Length: 407
Figure 1: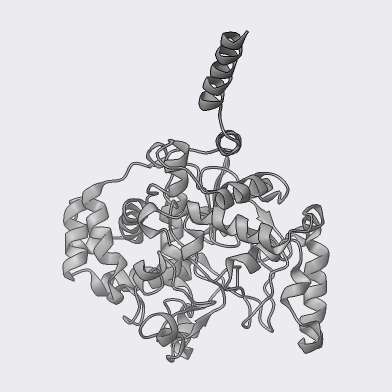
Figure 2 (figure 1 turned 180 degrees about the vertical axis):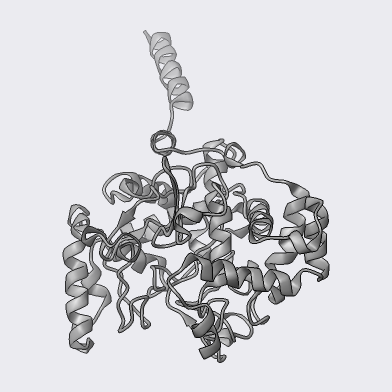
């Protein structure tokens, strides 16, 4: 009997040694949830690009001469130090000097939306670009400000054209520009692009671009420029390995708080309803009651979002779900960059009134925010999250940072 007890005890101990711990079980459940909602390895998502053209595009991306006033480049607002964003609530366009706070304190013109990071914009299936989706690839073709005259069927190439002709962003707002180019006509945009290209066609970067396509510099068009910039974006900002990727490949384990945050993200917090797919965005449009700062796209502290593109009242205050890759390193958050803490951005989804002081609002601000709250009816589906739960979700979102950028 004594020996039988020893044998049974030995078997039980052996079973306990090989049995998964609670932490292992929770990790396995989280991996299953992540895999279920569109997870892909970064290498699977890479889109083809011409590396030689990407190299030329990198130079053009940094070339201030390609702006109408020759004082701003694409890189001015997409900086490595801010993980391809600029660290400011609203972008500072033409006339801006320096980066970060220094740029905000300069005499540059304010562009009334937050700069979006560029990670993953060139992957297959990323077909809706900008906060309001003003460039979108559909079954019927490209929808954009170019109307029926889109220069390419590649949405990234089309999108690369637009900052170059955007007033305040890369074109100074002067009487001359108003008279010649600030018109509701596609031809005006093409005319402005052509003027820049003709002016710069004999510069070293443009000569290299013409040589790449085997044409004379005088034959260069906006399409050549857009394709080069798109190739650079696909190369420079292709997705890299995140801590979450390493977790999915079982190369690292997440800590207890990160696992808890992940289970909240996929469960109680219902974040996955909109933040799904390979870049953690459904690439569709939702109204979330983020506070508005700055004068807004529509002026007087108002930004109608997607409505500006569709003229459909149901799209008022809606913005495209932002991807979450590198989200911990790309503050501030929201279309107007009104929230600097990631935890506050989470809170805006279920407790937006905690982030504003209505008594300090002007009447128009107060009424606009009330309308936004009415449009944000999807938020009532999200239950209350306490501070510990919000912090846990923050910690999980930090795993979407590239491994070398983990704080």
